[in-house]
Length: 431
Image (cartoon, rainbow, N blue to C red; front, top):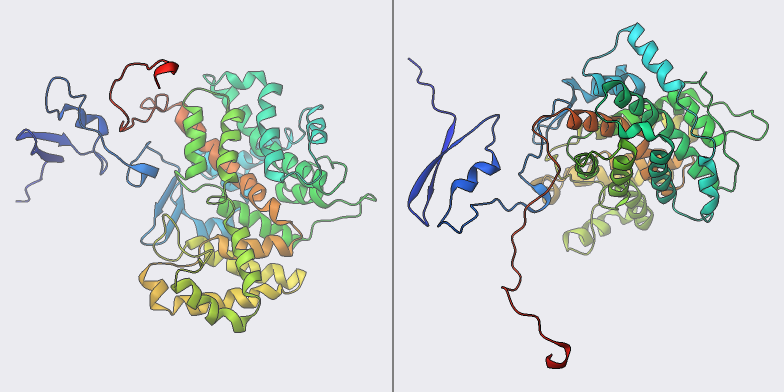
C-alpha cells in the first residue's frame, strides 16, 4: 500500500525551539503563514527576504507556462513553436485573453472588434507635436499610452466585464497606431491613419512606411516575420514589465495607466533594450576574424556576451530558434545583413565553449531579433516599441486575470528596516 505523505512543511524555529506545520499547495507555501513564527509578543513574525523576486510567486496564473531548465514556453498549454508556425498574432492574442483558440466565427468577431478600434482619439496625435524630433520613440509612446486614460473615462469602470473587454480591444488595436505615430514624428513625417482592410501587422507596416503617393504595399514575407515576432513577444509570465502592469493594476488604476507603467519598465535597458545591445556588440566586433579576441575579453571579465543567457531559461531559449529561422526568411528579401555572419559564428563558438555552456549561457530571443528589425528599416530606438506592441496582448491578459482574482489585493511589499532606532529631533543650532 502506498502511503500518501502530508502536503506540509515542518519548520523548527531554533530561536525558540518551537515547531510549526505549514501547508504546501501548488508547490508553494503562503508567506503569511510564517508570521506565526515569533520570538515574543512584540515580534511581528517571520518574513521572507527576496530581492527581485528570485523565488517568490506573486500570483496564480493560467496564461503562460515556462520551464527554464527544459526550454519550454507555452501559452494556455500550446507550445510557442506551434503558435509561431501555425497561428497569427491576433489569434494568439485571442488565446491569451480568452483562454482557448477561437473558432472561425470567434476569430472573425475578434478581428472585427480590433479593427473598429484602430483609430486613436482625434486630438491625441497633437501630443506628438510637443516632442522634439530626436525624442526617444519609447518615451513618446509611453506618454501617448498614458494619455489614452484621459480620453476613455469609461476605462475606470473595471468592475464591468464588458467594459474591461472594450479596453482590451482598444489596447491591442491602438498600440500599433501610437507606435507608428512615434516613429513618423521622429522621421519628420505626418502620421498615416489605419487601414482596417489590411491584416493587423500589414496595417502597422502601412502606418509606418506609407509613401506620400500611397504606393507602399507591405511585403508579405516581412509582414509575416513581424507577426511572428509579435507572437514571440506576446507574453512571458511574470517579467519586470508584467509585474509592473499587475502592481499598478492592483490599485484599480485603469488599464491605460497600468500599461504606461509596464511600458516604462520595458523602456529600461535590462528589459527591452537587449536586442539593441546585441547590435552594438556585433558592430564593435566588426568582423568574424575578431570573434576569438572578443571571446577572450569576455572570459577575462572585460565585456559581456549580449543576447546570451536569460533570467528564466537555463537552456536554449525556445524563441531563439524561431527567430533565427525568421531571420533567414527576412534576409532573403532585404539582402544579407553583414552582421549576421558575425552573429552565426559567435553563436557557434560560444555553444562549443565550456566557459559559456557550463554557465548555461545560450542564445535568447534578443540575439537575432535586432538584426531582423534593422534589416526591415527600423532605427534602434524603435526596438523596445516593437516589443511593447507585441507584449500588449500579454499585459492585457494579465491585467484581466488580476482584476477577477479574489486572492489579489493592492500590492504592498514588506521591508527589512535597517535604519536608525528612535531618536529625538536635534535643533539646527545644536547640530
